[in-house]
Image 1 (cartoon, rainbow, N blue to C red):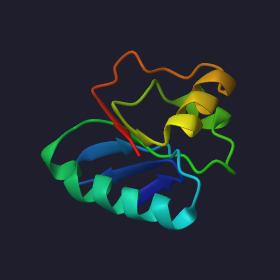
Image 2: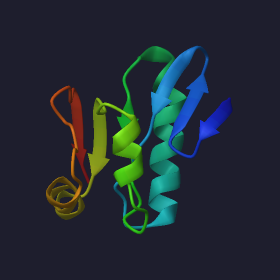
Image 3: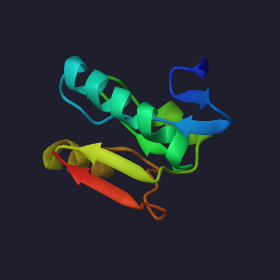
Length: 96
């Protein structure tokens, strides 16, 4: 797996766009492992965002994600405070 940026990876010919909504680094790491390990079976963009990290630049370069895993409060905060946050192509939502 090669990484072109902290938010974008290429894995087995599939582009994986990541944004993380997780209050703890350990939680983010576990979610990331799960999403990357299942990526050979789907071509969805998945998202994870640690709350201490600004995601505004990420959303300027990408056009939404298909899978979001988040706590309800962090997701609400992210949706309200991230300009240009796109969720119209959302196909999976996991509330933790």
